[in-house]
Image (cartoon, rainbow, N blue to C red):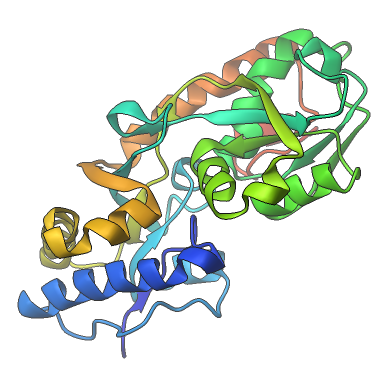
Length: 282
């Protein structure tokens, strides 16, 4: 049975050709290393969280929060990208607090009583990082008037533009791609704050993936990221390198939960197995 590969995190339609080219370069190197059943194409039609549970998962990308909690039993983190985006030094990344440019919201305190768009409960960039900033400002465990689940950072920004939400916390890599690819739409939005840096979302494989295949994956990634013929592809995807990592790399995300635990702030959603959800309020 052919293995599964997908790179869903920053796979904009406008950059799909570059994502495909990057995968083909990695796949060719894997085959040259003798790895069998390497897929020709990325599997974009199936839900990525279902793919994560499959023992034939060869390569995907997840949030560090997924690796830390709900998908820890299924996913092995193997590398974190180095993005060519401000705020992503040393294999890290941040999130931007984004509002409509015409809204009278310029500080975190201004956001009190607003509608917050959240991409996913297991998103560090969209929920966990934001929670750390808001928890000290909450009163009796509340800060926002409403929290709307959207399913994606891009959908959260669409809700901002349409007036269905007032604020969203957006991964700076998504924000940089959107500004470059959809500049006219993004002109209606502005950034008012940044979250603290965290380890960038990891490239992952199944825990069932053989050690020799994991080693070949890392070699293939290194080769693709050093290949001069892929320079334009890497520029399109805002990737300039990678750092080896393991699941323990993402233990750093626990520190972002502490302000909420200390202040009793459980308004924003959290992974099912997170201490925040275990308080019965998330």
